[in-house]
Amino acid sequence: MLGLMQDWPLLVHKIIDHAAINHGDREVVSRSVEGPIHRTDYRQIAVRAQGGRGAGPAGHPRGRPRRDAGLEHLAAHRDVVRHRRIGAVYHTLNPRLFPDQLVYIANHAEDKVLFFDITFADLVAQLAPRLPGVEMYVALTDAAHLAELAGKGIPNLVAYEEFIAGCSGDFAWKQIDERAACGLCYTSGTTGNPKGVLYSHRSNVLHALMAAQADAQGLSERDTVLPVVPMFHANAWALAFCAPMVGAKL
Image (cartoon, rainbow, N blue to C red):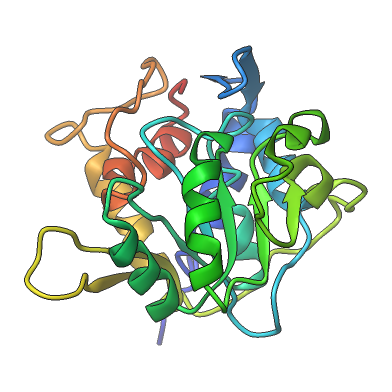
């Protein structure tokens, strides 16, 4: 006989759903690359995470949020959670690596979509001719600021706000095995080419549960968290999952 209490797989979208229901009004505050400070909350992040359209071919397209040390300028989870609804694998990339390493990593991972801050537009333009598998480049900005990137030669370029515009929020999360691939990070400072480390949904959820405990980061709803560790390093020590899990302000 099997127990049936809480009989559901450990999928990362459960974290943002939980945050929206139980900590919906908790703020997520960030300064955009363009300058203004933006305030949102977990409820709105959950709505936006449901809104983006699927990209790439059927199966498991790899969307690559290209992040530095900051949060995405509109929602902390928009880079990393929204892909889960189509079964995609998020792949963070360290922009401080040598261009040859970045090209190797993106091609080895078979990335299909590349998300980037306009801060990295010149680097993306440099890499794009060597990334034959990338089908779309999504600048994390709006149409007004997208014009600033004209002439850089980035192919199939779209602003994030246009990428999700007009998409219905009435979308059911894809139900997959909790052991399914969820996130991908590559090592640096290693012998030979960088090596990929593949996170599962289960490992991300368990990591967040453990990292938030009193003898680790000790996070709670009473805390305000300023992430410093970049997303490409162990998911910023799981902060993108820990904070909404406990309802901490970001």
